[in-house]
Image (tube, rainbow, N blue to C red):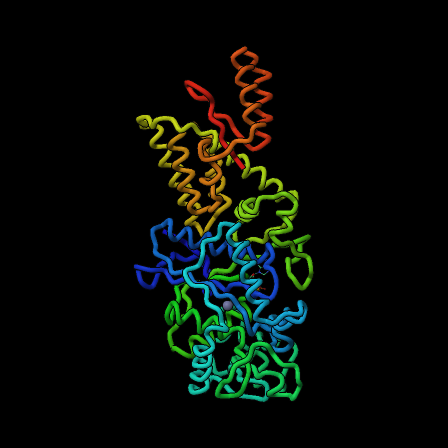
Length: 476
Ligand code: AMP
Ligand code: ZN
């Protein structure tokens, strides 16, 4: 049974989907005006681990992640430029080109991190009709009003506004950023539809992305896209919604208000799951501070992208995770060690297991399952992996167990082991293996052991066979 911490109730709860046959899960995806950094990818990896865990537990999951390609303004207070338009000016391209380029970059990095592909990856620019319809419903029901620069949600009309943060409306009002538009009724009111600058103020900077609407030419606000698209693909009520912790006070708070106001179905989301930040020198990694690294930066230094995934697994998703190169090096070393120990596992005939061994295997599996179902305790799950690696259970069973665990961990352990007939072994390695074999036959075991280590350092392991030549396996 899966237990999850729910930001809405601030408690660890037993997870029960609304409909037993499918779990409806939505994750706030990237805003594609620039590359995603490794802080962002921690949040997507957390969601990936949750989806994998649910599937491992035999739930069917419908997994939707949006790709924000319009409407996300540089300030949460609904002022300032659209990040997409800003990206376009920075690079001298159109916002459409920027969206295409950075969406592809995001998907490439996601693949390298072995992130599952969502079942649907909707974009707000392709769902303008749905968003306009939702805004119209909010106006019809009296939850929204129009002022000079757009249509806004009236947060004072929604009695449970702010429930996700645990703050009352008054406290949220005090915390809200600078008053952006004096016509707004409450500082916490947020834009559902913004007018293009030319339409409202006569300024001539023409947007690349704008659409007609019943209220005037413009573009949808950032929050409405997640409500409109999640409901389109998952229905009025979602089982799980994920994102980073910084989305709680504004984006997710606003998603709840407009969704519940439109449908009357409460709660819009049954389990809110938020991931904590990656830090650098104790500060949140963020684009605005410039203290960020991309996957390409770690690859340039010779790290395998999956070492980053291993690094993420070393901390619970609700704890801060401080990024350092030393920590990433340790993660890479640990990953290499797991890989080579798997490659070393003999593909011996499966023997009949003793009662004792069977019990041990069962106990490891139970321990692993208990870790992942305990609010996704991945550091503990990794500890079980190491117990198994170091255990004396027979190799084929060890292998099977680790491969099962990897369905959740996603370290792609299977692909690390390529059999010699599938893989071209370089001549240099073959020569070293032959030399080692010669030394072994001459019973020069110390020297042959030295050569074995050298070979392992080059990313290959030798599996000695009872008869014939040894097998050479690649570990990296
Ligand atoms: P953004 O592109 O800023 O909308 O962020 C995309 C996702 O990454 C959101 O779910 C954010 O909450 C999350 N995020 C942003 N910065 C970090 C960070 N330093 N560590 C972990 N997640 C982050
Ligand atoms: Zn969202």
